[in-house]
Length: 295
Length: 295
Image (cartoon, rainbow over all chains, first blue to last red; front, top):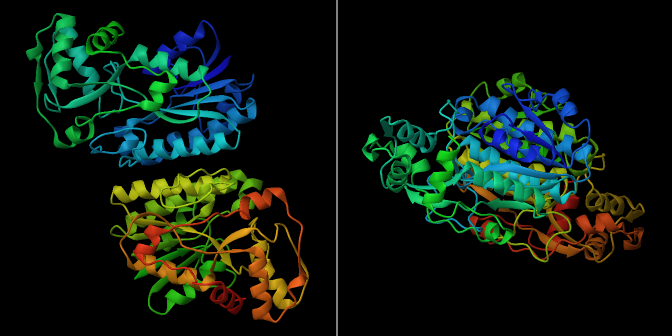
């Protein structure tokens, strides 16, 4: 398959590009490729889209985004990438292929913050951050374009993916990844949520496997991916065991806003995703081992 | 109240501006004002928004849109007005006022075509036309901006409003209004749907009254407005009685696509709108008299 990956030089994009590259013709697109072969530039630039789709298109994995914290700091740029860029990408993909598969990286941010007491496939979307709002409206747009036959779109709502690199990512949820880096390096870390904060997490390689699965099925619409759910204290304890580190390196200074946004993730039921064959890491031991393995 | 009305020189806008103008300070905005006092220009033009909101803002009624047929002919312009223009208008209103009231003209096009077997407040959105897709994503965006406290937004899904002027409006549903003009003038008209096509309609003055009601309440989210439901044959018969015309001036040459899109409007239950005090015309006699009265 000819697969265009946007945000290809990012955390998820690099792993996905490497994994798909052996069996498929992958065109990597990113604003900054950082040495990766591909097409550098902005999705709102028609020349970039023309180059990306010059040789046709069987599928797109659209990862490029301005994430939560960065979007709040620069709403105009976030709208340009998250909304205008996504809409232009869909049009270009539809013109280049025959109803190409279109996998969209959505987010649990569509459920808002604070989240409701439990989440399942019937939970209404209620974003409050610009980022979650952009994801919600693009899910609806992808569903519309799918009903029109322009694309075969599937929006995957990602939980927290671990462990992201330590570089500034604009993500308010960075602490979920930074705790892996700190404990592995034997460094202290002050966490901005409480020990009993509850998190939904998935390892990078598990996510890559789910995206590859999404490319191979025909389901459309929106799917909340399954996730392993745990307390932050349990996560810290398991990372410490796996990395041979002292768990007291992690201390807690809860920030009320971050606790509300990222530390109160409720019980999650993902019947549709489960039926379609999407999987989380299984248990905390596997998740931590997988996440530490890709640091 | 200081009320900005977009699309103010249009069919609904002129009647609303006239009705609100006596008691409120109304700023009319339209691409072409056609002699109406106000601010002429595009919502995507920052200078137009600056002028519209220069003296603050208590409320916005956002009627401006590129409608269904026109949107399919020029998707880029439709996106610029229906999406970019709406998002820019929300930002400008939020900056100019203190959580201003924001009434958005949405449409039953969000339910797609063909429509499901019945429609109520739990019916999922499933647009297929670009126009309905734009309305659906802007409803979600207005809800997001309302949760953020930027605006106090309410999206009203309009049924067919009668009787629009005979000028080309870009609306595929124009036949619903043209039948009033033809029978009143004693002219023949060939209708593109069957006699047993079922329609949801509301008269212009009933809609104006509902929009004024929306400005005065605090409810947010999306509301499907109530509508009188009838067959086209019953509508033709009543217009003929009220206008003293021969009902056989109307003939039928059903177009399958138009019948599916506009002639199969199913039973409609609007519990939320009813509870909030929104009303349809009452019965066919009142609706036809009201519509003929504003021709």
